[in-house]
Amino acid sequence: LRILGIETSCDETAAAVVLRHADGRGEIVSDVVLSQLEEHSAFGGVVPEIAARAHVEALDGLVTEALTRAGVSLQEIDAVAATAGPGLIGGLLVGLMTGKAIAMAAGKPLYAVNHLEGHALTARLTDGLAFPYLMLLVSGGHTQLVLIKGVGDYERWGTTIDDALGEAFDKTAKLLGLPYPGGPAVEKAARSGDPERFDLPRPLVGEARLDFSFSGLKTAVRQAATAIQPLTEQDIADICASFQRAISRTLKDRIGRGLARFRERYPEENKPALVVAGGVAANQVLRATLQELCSAHGFSFIAPPIRLCTDNAAMIAWAGLERMAAGLPDDPMAVAPRSRWPLDAEAAARIGSGK
Ligand code: ATP
Ligand code: MG
Ligand code: FE
Image 1 (cartoon, helix red, strand yellow):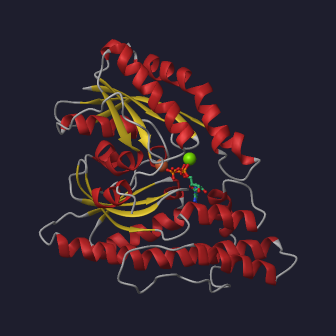
Image 2 (image 1 turned 90 degrees about the horizontal axis):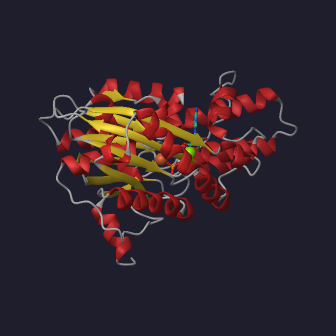
């Protein structure tokens, strides 16, 4: 089976062709991503209207390029998969409508894919990972710990009650006058900093529920920064290092509890795994923390290549392939994009019923 994937939910326009071999192995045949980072950097964040327009301009060319690089025509594709949510509605409309048009013109089935499902199933494409496993998604828009039980079968164990982790990095960078996107800038500055200089808060540590909270951390950074004026380069480095230390300690507690819960739930599982996804997965301190934690709990730690951790269309194509292979139905042409669309059925039903 061969599928064309399209991703336009945020600030990356992407198209990919992915193959699923008879033995279930996945193969990325082509994978093109165009980041809109430059269009948005002057604004210090993603501007929805600019993003939607940029998707319109780029998508056709990217789809053609993905097909050309794969050396296949539309007729040689078995289906089209496009991200239908969650994300910025303008971008989702562009990608989903394009996907529908291509599917209709070529007479192929359409899969309207949940972006989070793309992240959730990536480790099966890269590492052939078997269910069940845990996924930590840490990006600019999401911070979630999710139990991945099967295709279309997810349980969200924890989520952020305020800012996403990537957002906390971005806001902290902005406060300190560092460039956008903040994550790489904060990580770089932290390398020459003293992580013990500031004792920043570690919200929810010690609590039994598995949620996250990062807005208090950002406020504490603001207080620390305004207390010392003017800030020297060393002060900034120390704040960044202390910020990462606080995050590291928080994640150790939160994720550690998640791993323990997984153990209780699946006592017979002898090779449990934690997968990380999202742009923040590029952070070396975070990786080292998770690696250490997993080793301590007897889990394998799986970090797909960064290119596949950040937003891309290969994961969307793969999620479509997984749905096809699992015998799940394709989607009607009337399917609509959804800016909010939680992965697990329980949370999705709550939104559907307006609660
Ligand atoms: P979505 O949340 O919808 O998946 P997004 O575009 O917000 O989309 P990604 O592109 O996956 O998310 O990740 C971008 C985020 O990752 C930004 O917040 C950025 O600051 C953060 N990030 C990138 N590199 C690093 C790093 N080295 N350390 C920490 N954070 C990082
Ligand atoms: Mg992005
Ligand atoms: Fe994403």
